[in-house]
Amino acid sequence: MENQERPLPEKMLTAKEVAHRLSISSSKVYQLLQQGAIPGVRIGASVRVDPTDLAKFVERCKSPNPSASFEQSSSSV
Image 1 (cartoon, rainbow, N blue to C red):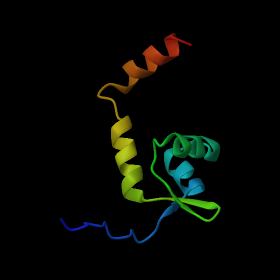
Image 2 (tube, rainbow, N blue to C red; image 1 turned 135 degrees about the vertical axis):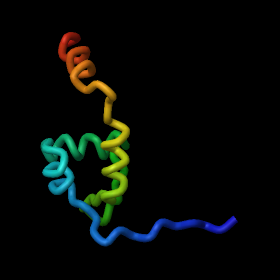
Image 3 (cartoon, rainbow, N blue to C red; image 1 turned 180 degrees about the vertical axis):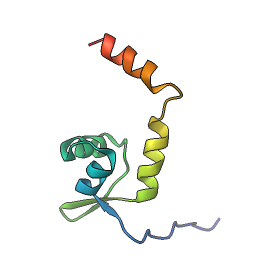
Image 4 (tube, rainbow, N blue to C red; image 1 turned 90 degrees about the vertical axis):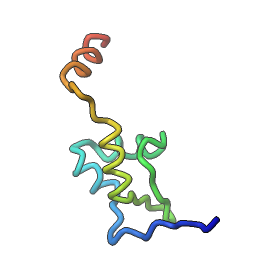
């Protein structure tokens, strides 16, 4: 069986760029990377995210009724 490698994306995203796209803090991005929720690539001290992986993460997070999910999570606080 051949090793089917994905071609490299034109541009990998920094944690700051991911934070900007998701409207969250950079520290939250690093937390999601550490948890493995968003796949990342470590290059020396830097971390990069493939835009395709970020899009998959967003799709996994989608809820058919986001307001219902928000009400459930906020009522348990």
